[in-house]
Length: 232
Image (cartoon, rainbow, N blue to C red; front, top):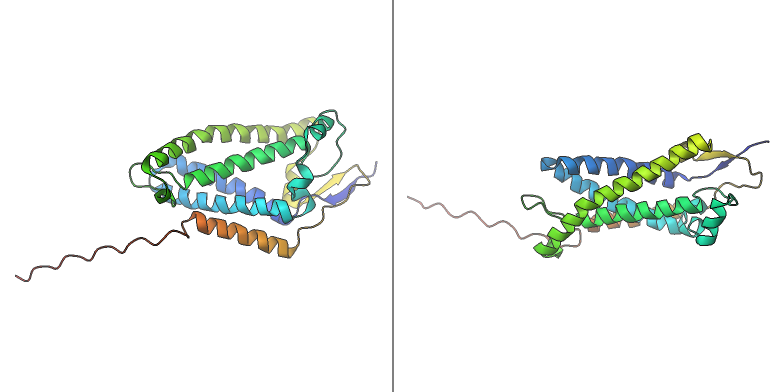
């Protein structure tokens, strides 16, 4: 059978995917180490907010395979996929659930981290918007949610390994190159995702990161002037 080479993933989607991997791993390492690394942990959290905002916007105005309306389907599509009757490119109906769960959990971690504190020296950039009790509660949830994220990432990686060995379908390579060889002669490359759409999504992501970093908060009061030294 002649295989057809089609473009599955656009460049913005691929850049988001691998940026998320790098930022998430770095955020976990800096958060676990704590101490002086919390400054970098906070910065990575702000970047993560921007990445999630970018992806949510790109999921509306990006290319076909990136759009939520294209790959998020109902129970009927999931059942058809499990029966082996699903045909398409990009995320399958079950993989779409994993994508939504990952975006939701990573988004929650990023946003909740903005309101946390460590009772010593660290406070999230939006900590001042909530009282101490609420911040303490969010901090606890933020820490415990790490295990849920680790489990979901493990399932995601396990699915990739399963596809590679059981179905002989390399899901990683197309996410690097953007291209994939398929058996379906009627399959077409993904379309859409213009430069204008990318600029809009990028602007939304940058605006979200700016807000997450406290861009809308009033500036802190100036430090008090040092007391005058008596002239004696």
